[in-house]
Every structure is written in structure tokens, then in C-alpha cells.
Image (cartoon, rainbow, N blue to C red):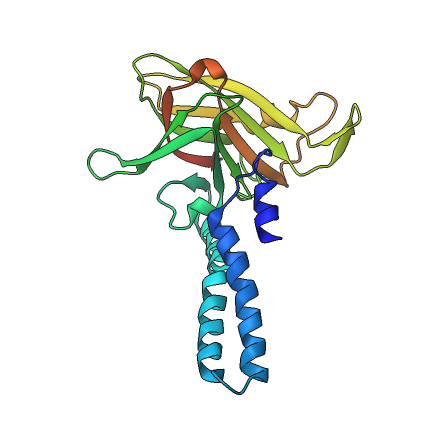
Length: 232
């Protein structure tokens, strides 16, 4: 069942994970070993030690998420940067590759996102700090990695369930910008985001995720992302 749950994620926006599969397997194995340790007379101590070890290993992803949620609170108004110790629980790649590099002089870490071939390659952030109502703008610190401009699309969605044309979705904001030499900061007023969904408002108290992606024409090209933050 664990393998099936990971395999069915491949054609979706989510990514299958060998780590999650192993965690599922170890969790199940530890439960079996606990039963053996309680009911069996032979190898009781060995079974108990093995079960405890497997259970601790299986709980590591949950512990990482828990520490990640604490870290995101203390990092505010920064929503994300690549120096977060548990930041990898908040992003996923789609048809893209990520390389981390330290800025010159030992500054902030830059995430170099290289777009692959296929529809909508990029980096997608989920479960960042959701309440943006106290702020005036979202700011992306970027870094050019190509001699010419690279077109990047930004997608911001809330958690509001709605039905449009028979499809269930969420309110969303979509726009684009160019990352070119000399461009360091992309600033988007939240007022322009809030009313970008036509006759509905983006719920700034319950933001679900951010996507930074490109079209197929940018395949093989890249841009650098330093941080995403909120600004008063």
C-alpha cells in the first residue's frame, strides 16, 4: 500500500519519494516487531530494540516537518530561504533541477533552479506561513544566472475551495517577471494579488502555496532564488 501511494503521485503535481516509502515500510515493520516482542518468548529483547530503532527512523519525516513549522514562525517576515535548516519540507521541484550555492563573501545561499523540458517546470512552495494580512507586499530576492532575461511565472493560491466550470479549485493570482543581470528584487503589492481572481478575493489569511515556473521555451535555462519574504 505504501508503494502504491507513492507510485500514484508520479503523474500528479506531487513527487514520489523513496524516503516516504521506506518510512512507511519501517513503520509497519516496527509494529510487527513490537507484537513479536510482546507475545514471543524468543528474541524478545532483540525484537524490541529493532522495533524501537525502526519506529524512530520512520518518525524522522514527521519530526522534520514539526521543526520546519517552528522555523517558519521564527523566520517571519521571511517566508522561505535556502538557509533554513528544515526548508526542504516546504518545496518540491517539477521537471527542474536545484543547485545550492553560497553567495560571494559567505552571504545567503542561492538556489539555482534549472528548468527542464516539459509543461510548467519550476519550484513550488507549500505550507509556508499562511496569514499575510499584516503585510503590504511579497518580495522575491533573485539572482541572474544567464546573460539574457529569463521569463518566470509566479502563481499564488489560497485554500478557498470553489467550483468553476465543473472543476474544483482555489482562488489564485498569476503573473510573470523577467530575471536579468542587474535585477535583484521583485516586489508585488498584496493589493494587486488580493483582487486578481476577477469576481473573487484571494484570502490573504489563508495562503496555500506559491509556484515559480516557466514555459517550455525556457528549458535548459535557469535563475537564482535567494529568498521570499513579506514586507510592510
